[in-house]
Length: 598
Image 1: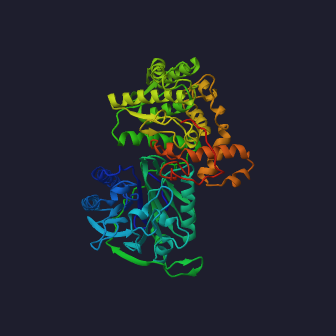
Image 2: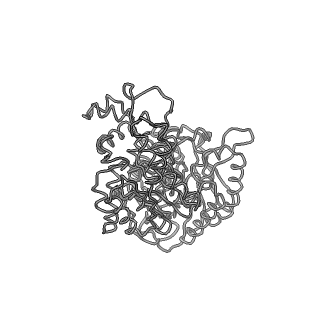
Image 3: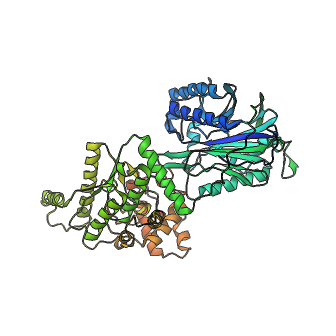
């Protein structure tokens, strides 16, 4: 439940008890989200919480995207908020919601509403609207113009929303500190990528120390399409200490007792000099806070940050769990080839959904080795999942027979390879149609980046679990999954085998692609860090290999555009994070042909 910030408190008038409810909402489920909020309010009241804060846009879910363009949706959000306000009795509630535009028109606001004494008592409208990466807030919202300090029983608390606290040049924290707030609450919906939790915490402790105040940061948790929110909410003290930290990738209620004397700020001197506020400052005075209970908080150790592989694995499990469940699928199905990508996908889905809801399909051809087929069966047995075997040899031969006239005097090439992949995709989609199973694709970021995949074949499906996972990380996560099981779940032979699509005799990925460690480094520099060709080769990489990889990346945007959504775990993922035109004559290197699997 969190940790106490002020130890040795002798009576309940010396502290203000604050709770942060990191919650997993579903976009558009207004009544369902409101019910979850009410349950958290009830739980917090029993623990003596006086002020509870919920994440950004928690009432409607984040991001609601073009739902925000529907006036009826905004009106329904406001109606739900008004009903929710009745639960704010004996406790003050800060909740994120879209606020409809005023009668004079315009866009809605991204708003933090203060609920107390059974009604809506104040509104803070987000000032800094992010418009980069996965964020499109200027498309939907208009910026607020006023900072807000709410005076709770002579305890001034400043309110901000997500991006407001990330801005260095005149952040809202400065503004509300100037207004006397010794506690700053930031409600947020900050998506996960690797190492994001520690990065955020470092910022919050820095903001707390530089502004000599408490920072209470509450983040969303859960999966929403490509995005995963990791929670990891934090309360930071004026000395830069982390007072409490929320659990990663779980709903949680973080509680801390903050000394009232330290929470009452005076006019703030920024870096030793008095300063004037940049924005108009609104101060709202509310009735006395309810008295907190005298009993001590439930004690537990501060949650530790996860290690890198564990962090990514949990993000993939949560993202898969929420995508499948929030979209109402009972079971998932995917091709289980005996290779490492499908093996890791199987392990993640079992951890996310349970073995009863996971079906693997092995679809051997004349090019499938006994070793990979054996590994597919071994993995299915280790995980306890159902495995179907649907051989494609006869179907493939019927395709060749049908096409032999028009293909006369043509040599076999990538065409025949991709027919096999498309047969497999067709079979999986038939199972999906017949039984209502969601088809998962198993391709990784390295393959998707360079187009080493078959359109309408292994790209056919509804969700791509490993879409943003580089091949080298696939190996690391597979070893991690075996370590935490303390036994060989993913066969060692699968991990050690050289990767192959097995679409022709003796085929290996390295025949077409640079070695994966080198390819993944190029993808990181070119895609995630937007470095140019000359900048990449300046790092010491072989120019010819870099040129080949960049060409493949540039020429395969059309494939990526037609692929299913997948979980973002890197700073820049394909999809809503990186959006390039398909028809595009600008290249990262000199123009030329790219020979990749079509």
